Image 1 (cartoon, rainbow, N blue to C red):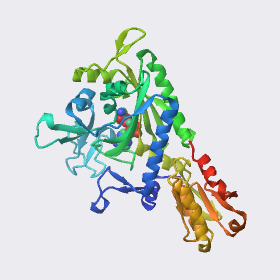
Image 2: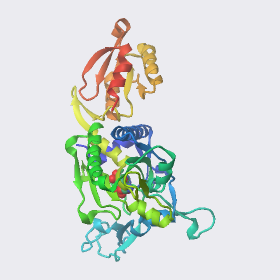
Image 3: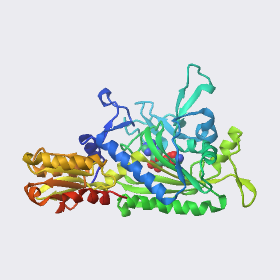
Image 4: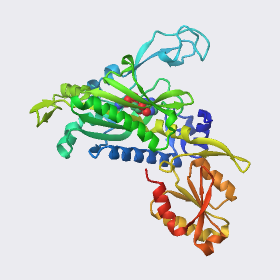
Length: 432
Ligand code: GAP
């Protein structure tokens, strides 16, 4: 039922996502997140961190720089290999990735066959540090967060108490000059990644690879994604990126087909070996048992925050009919919902009492809204559309019974609960 157009319209209408620099005509493939989108993103990040910490007690976090010098990207292989083949239409100047079009057929934009020869296009954004413009001052905006983890591997090992096997996790922006950004948040030029690099002994790496793939699939179920719309798919050898020995994608059944949501890659010792070679610093470790040095292997779990954001919206978007009225409802997991509950007085005469309860819950750090305008039905619809799982209504009975009604978003079922129990009720429902 959810189409891309409906999701884009809802995101704009309710303040989840805006086109970046919209008042100047917009910047293609770049988006700003509005008040509700910011909250949803925060909840996505928090649930990812929690799932990582639950899976293993020796995962530490890192926040690397967005800019990296030429040497890092030369060593990682991005300077030489991070290319997309592209062609231009010489008639209308439209540019395409060669895998998106058939060069035997006319340009989908102008209907003429006038292609340039295919050529490689490096997707990194290049910039200069300072006033000089030589290779030493060249820097790149990172196209993935992972490299900051590899180049800090020894720093983390020597400044914390972690021992192999352990993980370093990072959430942060990445930048790719995509030739054709598309499908809204699916393929962007500026986006955010959540990556965890798991360092382990070579002989244990295949086992860890399988375990992480299963764990990551379970994460999506834990945050409420429909299990039938998630699958694991192993890469064929000719699909593998330059750094990986094996890869399993977590795919989601988007309206535009099954597509990658997350990649779990067995990167072998590619990255640490490359950085050892290029930096001249030994990134190997010493095994106390075997009395030998070795370069750890890496299993990587990498997912885009924005792509997961889009996935949760597609998965949650529902249209149904309640009391003969059509509604749009976002059936988001309470853990992800941007607003956890709304507090409503039945009439404005009861506003003070309802507001006092709302203030107490808000002071506990739970994101809640107070809504007293419009009919109660209209208020429910407003909250349904942004995915608020619970609406508490203070009515005239509340005055004498010390209770409020709580309405459940998905079923619209209502029950009365004691005002003193609201905090416990929410705390239970909001834990992963
Ligand atoms: N470090 C490995 C890596 O970056 P990737 O498959 O290129 O691997 C990992 O990216 C994840 O990042 C993807 O599964 C996707 O969720 C997200 N991602 C990649 N490119 C993206 C883009 N242009 N826009 C939004 N998300 C993107």
